[in-house]
Image (cartoon, rainbow, N blue to C red; front, side):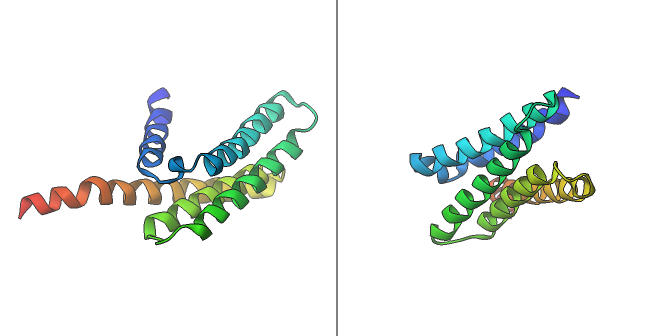
Length: 136
């Protein structure tokens, strides 16, 4: 079970390491703060504490708005940037959908699909094209 969780986490860290968001400390801090709000909201939800829904919703909206603003400012935009935006928006939707049980499964599937599309396209761009060029 641990390996199943480590592979996506490792891929996300690899994608983040190659990204440009880490070069802007202000935006990075804001994105991390919003993500921390989601994590704390999930922990509150697990403990059935008051304020969990507000933290989840606030973190989800904050993450979507912050990363959306980052995406709007970024030039030039590539297909990988669009996939990153779709993944962040699907994570935000999933965090907000935890409050509504009817949407949780669909939002989770969308998040999983967008993650694997992002990860596979990133791996192809980073490692796959260079392997194909070496075969010729």
